[in-house]
Image (cartoon, rainbow, N blue to C red; front, side):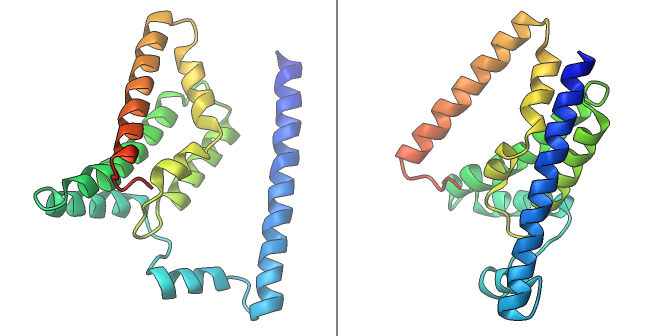
Length: 176
């Protein structure tokens, strides 16, 4: 097992180094073309009114929108707001439940990832962003290890959610 952890740790460091290299190239390209390394954030604010914020604020405004849309636009209230709220809370809950089982670096990365990606103002893509967090499936696997009944229950819930999500998509709900 220690060898597997060492190999996984080396791979993760290599992947993170590659991602930082790509991010540096992206920032450098922005600097070379626009004269500002963070021009993307200017465009996001200018064109979509989006900037970084606190993920707790994201939950708050989604609750506000869900309440205001509930009567007039229930599809948006459920498809956008409820999905985002559940996604954020489930991801945080999964990380919290796996605190003693996940490597500390993975847990730290997961919390930082959620804080940054889920903190964007007017966030529509919380479910897509959560799918990109590599340590969530690992955390779930660690929590379900040697628990066959719980594993079957979680699998049944995942299948039901996938069926509902597909049904919503096929019926024109706002799926982001």
